[in-house]
Length: 202
Figure (tube, rainbow, N blue to C red):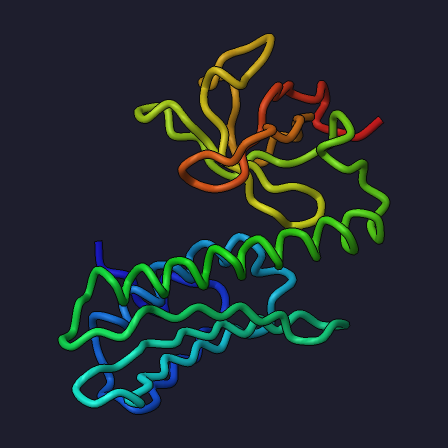
């Protein structure tokens, strides 16, 4: 599915150096930027620089640098590059972009966990139960999304709901949850989701 700037809640600036602007690479950058979109309440800007290095004759190396701006800290930077190649290989170039955003996502997640959770005095998810709000329920695909008090979006499967079923949940409900030990295909996941009676924090 095509991704454009309107699909994101964070501004993404893309710059091409030493190469022509590419719709394919631009689309891949925006697609990967969705991984950072869940941190939109903390990120003010994402700058991506794609740089083709032509140091070797008839070969080039693609560098991808992702700069994430978060108020109150230095810009978080993630960089990756591919091996020199003779022809344009979209698979290799996409891999470089994907890996750069994977590193950026881990750094942003670690920064927010370290600073914002403690700043807002919310219990750290890994330490036990925390509170969040249901933002989406997909009864057909049997999964949903919740937003933590720190502004992070977490994916969850219907099997993670305890005491009730996925169909008993709806957007706006407050729940308690624990953070799953391993990330899933959609990023960080929540488990042991229980609806807070009355929807209010004790």
